[in-house]
Image 1 (cartoon, rainbow, N blue to C red):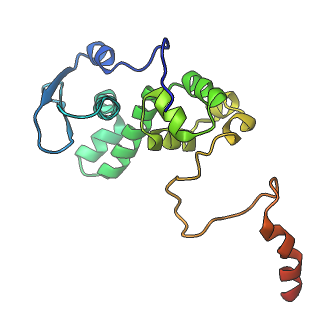
Image 2: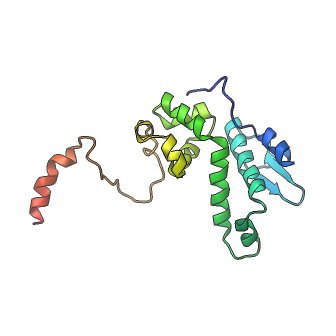
Image 3: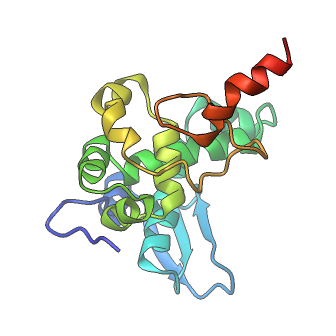
Length: 186
């Protein structure tokens, strides 16, 4: 697996200090992270892998960043779902973990999601999510030719139980049979 060296990467401790948040490692039996807004503290399972710890802390720190947002206020008042908050938190955590410049560098080097994730020191699903929710500005930075090199969609959690083929950019055996099949429906 690819490893990144010499590059700046997301540092949860630096972000926690910037936000005035304390991080504590606790011997929980399950892999969990707890954000305590009242104490501005995060408790995280002590025995996580480095990658999982970074992601758990990034997630909890994203909660801290969004603590005073409209979405969180509405959720605390029961006017918004917790799921909406979690999705916003996850998106922010992914952005914190993978700045667009680092993602562009990784995509220029590798064509495998696992290699990109290894270089960025995140889980492959985090890379997939980050790619799936690029902003319009980020889409201009990551041109289609760079993104299309990556196999990011291969293991993605796709909502359909079938594969959707919509492009003729690559020769597929199904395309040879298509004219014959279409004639039957006319």
